[in-house]
Image (cartoon, rainbow, N blue to C red; front, top):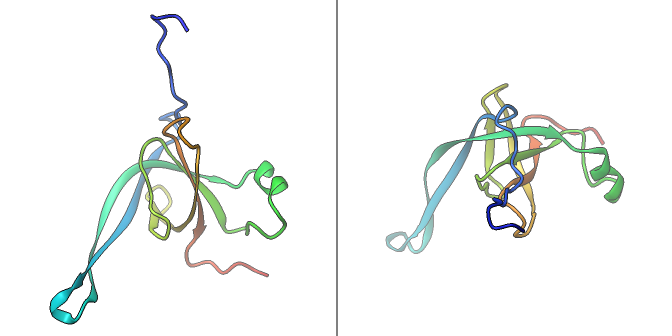
Amino acid sequence: MQPNMVKRLPRIPLCLLHPMEAVISHGSHDRLQGGQFVQEPPAREQFLGVVMPISNEDIRTSPPGTYTQDQRKIYTNDYRLTVGSQVTDLHDLKSYMVEQELDHQFIHTMRRYIVTRKGVASPR
């Protein structure tokens, strides 16, 4: 690589990203209550992301029954979501539950997550 070349990491184009909101749950164990877990009011953080459908390649390379019709992918450039957290797409006000992080290892900072739409029952 030439010294004047800049190494560029893959990024999601800004034209695809729109505001999303993550609900961050916090809590702690209270010694005065015998070590019981005390839930604190949830915090909300906004970030830029995009919801995309599960690709045909994901479906083709996964065991049958891995994905349902209510699952999607959320892509972010740098924002890290927690498995089990709730995310709301502020573009269409749909809510999702984060099921799994699809890791890129240390290749770049783009993040992918498998999410399930909330409030929708999947047919069997």
